[in-house]
Image 1 (cartoon, rainbow, N blue to C red):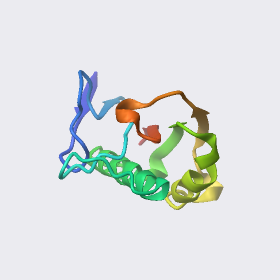
Image 2 (image 1 turned 135 degrees about the horizontal axis):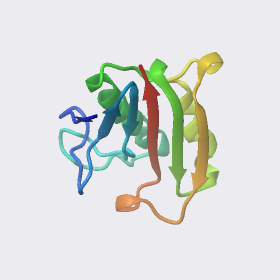
Image 3 (image 1 turned 90 degrees about the horizontal axis):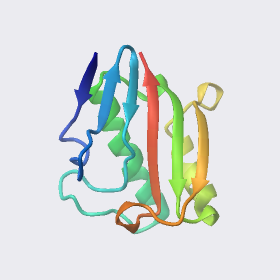
Image 4 (image 1 turned 60 degrees about the vertical axis):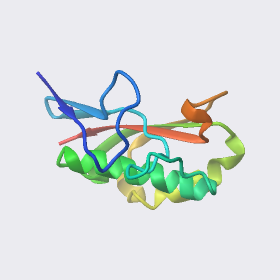
Length: 126
């Protein structure tokens, strides 16, 4: 059985999907971009601000499922420019304890929704 997870503390889906789906003890999140959930405006002033908004959106989705970043076992990071990797990684790493950080891949892509610079999705377990 699956349970749909949606919160008003993260951007509402802009297509036929949900913010996350919980099945058994595993949470699968949709990718989050840097939309401010209050205004639905993009936060793209700097790559650091953009990544912070993405991580805060993800934090809200995890919280709605009763989880934190400690529950995350896998992340996927999609970026439009690998030259931004160090800055993105600096923000991302502040949300995890390095000793127990999740598995991860980071992939440079040609384009992302709304032409943002970073999108992150996660898998978490209870």
